[in-house]
Image 1: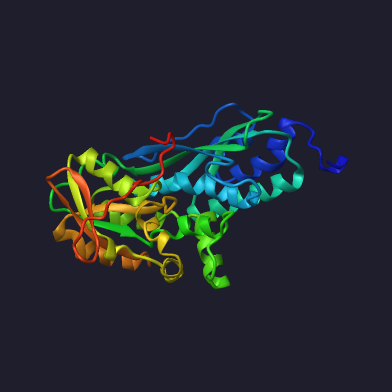
Image 2: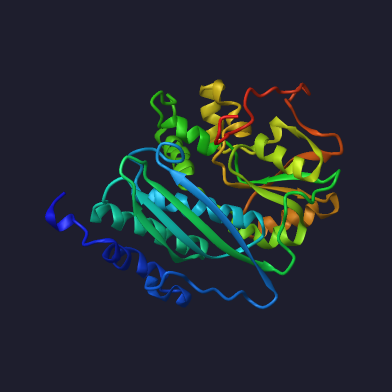
Amino acid sequence: MDEDDKLAGEDSLIQTYFAPLTSAFSGAYGLKEDCAALTPEPGHDLVLTTDAISEGIHFRPGDAPEDIAWRSVAVNVSDLAAKGARPIGYLLSLAFPELPDRDWLKRFTNGLREAQDQFGIVLMGGDTDRRPGSPLSATVMAVGSVPQGCMIRRGTARPGDLIYVSGTLGDAAIGLRVSASAPVTGLADDDRAFLEKRYLRPQPRVALRDALLAHARAAMDISDGLAKDLGRLCNASQLGAEILSASLPLSDPARRAIELHPELANLPLAGGDDYEILAAIAPGQASAFEAAAQSVSIPVTRIGILRPEPGVRIFDADGKLISLRQSGYDHFGL
C-alpha cells in the first residue's frame, strides 16, 4: 500500500468516509457521539430489522466495493418494504480483515450513497473494526416507520387468501450461476449482464408500501427462496399453500437461461436472493392491490392460494406435484 493510501486511524476513516453520509440526519451528530437519537413521527411505530453479509457467504471475494455496500443496505430495506415501513435510517458495523485502502473505501461509500438516494434512507451511525483472519463483513440495522399498529406481519394470513409475488423470480440465483466457476454458457451478453446485476444490486420494493398497507393481510420478503419463505409465512399463519410453477413470473433473460440449461428450472422456486415481496391478499382486494401496484410501476403476479391444510404444494403445468430436494437457502445447512 502506498503511503498516500494509508489511513490515519479509525477516527479519520469515520469522519472522512462515513460522516458525510449522515448529513441529512441531525440525530447522528456527525458521527461524533457514541449513539444517535431518533424521535418517531407522532402516531407511528418504529420497525427494526438487521442483516449481516459476509464475504464468501453473501457476496464473493472480488465483488466491487460499491456492490457490496449497496447489497448491505438493500437486503435490510427489503425487510422494511415487506412490513409496509418507510425506510428512515440505518446503523452500519464493518469488520475488516485488514486495513482497507482509500480507493476501496471511496467506492464503498459511493455505493452506500447510491443506495441511500435510491431507497430514501440515511446513515445514522455504526462501528468499524479490524479482525485479522476473518472475512470482510457488513452488518446493518435498519429502521423504518409505519402508522401505529399497522406493521404487516407474516402470521396474519387467512385460508382462501391469494398468494402474490412482486417482480420476477430466479434472476439473482441464475445471475450467480452465470458468473460462477462453471458458468452458464450460450447466453447473450445483455442477458448475462441483466442477470448478474439482479444478483449484485437487489431492488427492494419500497414503492409497494402503500399497496401493501392498504390491501395485504400478510407479507414478507423473499430472500432464501420462494418455497422456503412461503413455508415460513404458512407456518406463522398455521396454513398451507398451493402454487402453480407455470404461474411464477420470469424475466426474459431467466427464461432463455432455463431454456438453454434446464437444470436451472428450480431456481425461481428455491434459488434465493430475489428480494421480492410475497403477499397474502384477500380475494376481494385482489383487483385493488393489482391496480395499486401498477400505479407505482411494480408488477405483481398471483401464483397460488392459501389453504387450511398444512404444507406447501407446488404443481407443474400438468397438475403433478413437484418435489424439491431443497426448498431454499439455509444459513446452517439444515
